[in-house]
Image 1 (cartoon, rainbow, N blue to C red):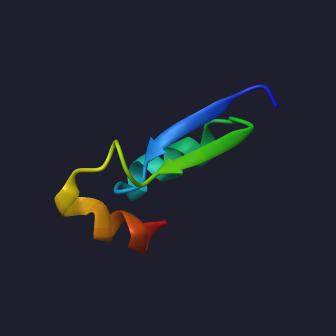
Image 2: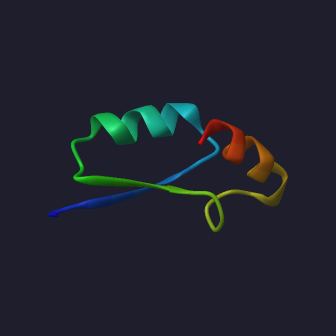
Length: 46
């Protein structure tokens, strides 16, 4: 494993870009990078 990419889970656009970026692992962050009012949305998208 060479690269890890953390991406906020509340943006489908950012998730698409992350998966196309070529990282070995994409980690969908549902906590720290997501505003409290968007956490339910992030869980639905992920």
